[in-house]
Length: 81
Image (tube, rainbow, N blue to C red; front, side):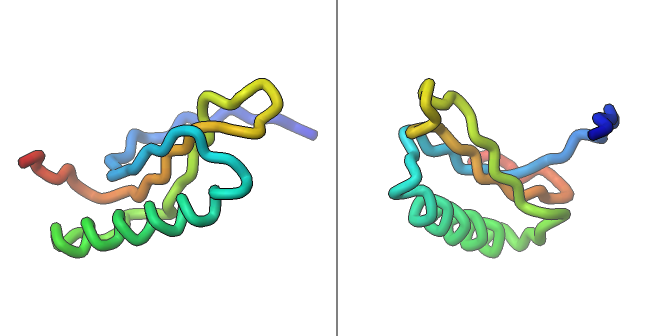
């Protein structure tokens, strides 16, 4: 296996973070987050600017529980109200 390093440009995204996710509730958490993000983007008249991403962070030692960040890239920032 060959490992390569690549520099990528920064990407603006909207995301939802959830804590204490496990394999039993992961699909429901991801589905709920995707629905909320797509609704929010629609309300803001924004389109996806690339593929959504899912980041796993802060895992327990045995990976039975972790935090996730489910994000969707957009072209420009959305003003915070």
